Amino acid sequence: MTDLAQGLRLRDDFPGVGDWHYLDSAATAQKPQAVIDAIARAYGADYATVHRGVYERSANMTLAYEAARRKVAQFIGAASDAEIVYVRGATEGINLVAQSWAGTQLKAGDRILLSTLEHHSNIVPWQIVAERVGAQIDVVPLMRDGCIDLDAMAAMITPAHKMVALAHVSNVLGSVLDCRRAADIAHGAGAKILIDGCQAVPRLAVNVAALDCDFYVFSAHKLYGPTGIGVLWARQDLLDAMPPYQGGGSMIDKVTFEKTTYAPAPTRFEAGTPHITGVVGLSAAIDYVQAIGLATIHAHECALVAKARSALDDLNSVRLFGPESSAGILSFEVQGVHPHDVGTILDEGGVAIRAGHHCAQPLMRHLGVEATARASFGLYSDDSDVDALVQGLARVRKIFG
Ligand code: PMP
View 1 (cartoon, helix red, strand yellow):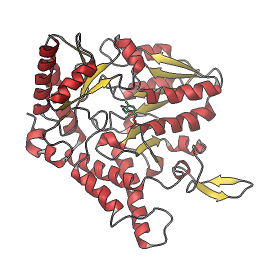
View 2: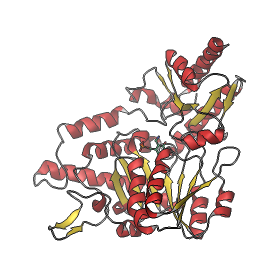
View 3: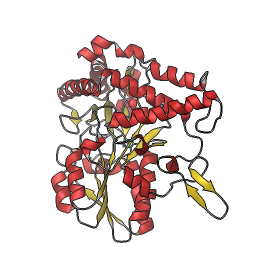
View 4: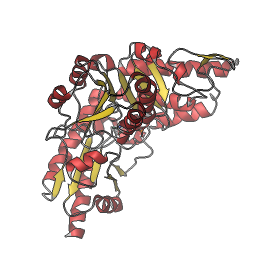
C-alpha cells in the first residue's frame, strides 16, 4: 500500500466512501467532510447573497466568493483572478467559449481541430457553432497507445484552423496530453487552444501559464467539490474581447431600453445569482487537495493504476485500453462479457465501476467496442479497492465460464 493511503487514512475523511470500493471517481469524486462542512456553513449561519447586500453578512459572503476566485487563480497558475469565470461546469465553460469566442471569431471556411478521444462536451458545442458559422471540424487521430498523435496534429493543422480543443487527460483512457507541445503547434498555425482539464485538475498539478494554452476548463465535482460549479480560465485579452454569453442581473454596467452596457470580465459572463455555496465548496476542495499536494495524489493514483493493470493483465481474458502511464483511469473489457454485466456483478461485491461509452462514442468506434468497463481512482482509493476489483472479475469469469 502506498504511504498516502496508509499514512493519512484519507478514507476516513470521506463519509461517502467507508468500506465501499468506489472506482468511479472520474465520473464524480466523493466529498471530504471538510467540503461538506463548508457547504453546510455557507447554507447555514453564513448564508446571504453576494455583491448586492448592504449588510455585513452579504459583504462577508462576497469576500469569501471573491477570495475563492483568487484561490482558483493561484491553484491553476492564472495571471489574475479576473481571468477566472465561474460556470456550471466544464460543459458550460466549453459552450461559453464556443458561443462567445468562436461564434464571433469564426467565419465560413474556418476549421476547428478536435481529437478522436474527446468527451461529447468537447465535441457537440463545436459542432453547434460550426454549423451556425459554416466552419468545419477536423479530428486529430490517436497513437496506438491511446495518446493524441501530436505529430499528426502538426502535419494536419493549417492557417484555416482557428481553434484547437483537446482533453488534458482522457476520461476513458487516462492518457495525458503534452499540452505545451499541442499549444506550440496550435499557436504556430495561428490557432487558439482550449484544454478540457476535467480529468487533469484532480490528478495533476496544472499551471496554465506553463501549458501556454488560451482557455482551460474544469468541473469542481471531479475535484472533490460540489456539483453545479466549475471554472473557465481564459487569457485576459481574450475574455475582454468576448461578448456576453447570457444576459441578466449582475453582468451589466447600465441598462436602459435603448441600450445596455456590460460589466468587465469576468462579471460580464456571470449573469444571475451565482452558485454561492458551490464556490465556497470549491474553495474548500482546493484547500483539501492542496494540503495533500497534487504530486502526491498523482503518484498515488499512478501506483494504483500500475497495480491494477498488472493484476488485470494476469487474468488473461481481460483486454486493457490506454497507455501504461495512464493517470488514475483504467478502461478494460472482459472478453465475451458485456461491460454492463461486468459492472452489475462487481456491484454485488461492493465494487462500483462505470460501464458504457463514457460520453465518448467516437472513441468507442475507434476502439472497435460499444462500451468499456472503467475503473477510476481518487485520492481515497487504496490497494483494497484493486484487490476487490480483481476478486470481482474472477467472479465474473466464473459466472460467464
Ligand atoms: N470532459 C471530460 C474529459 C470529462 O470527463 C467530463 C465529465 N465526465 C466532462 C468534460 C464534462 O464535465 P461536466 O459534466 O462536469 O460538465
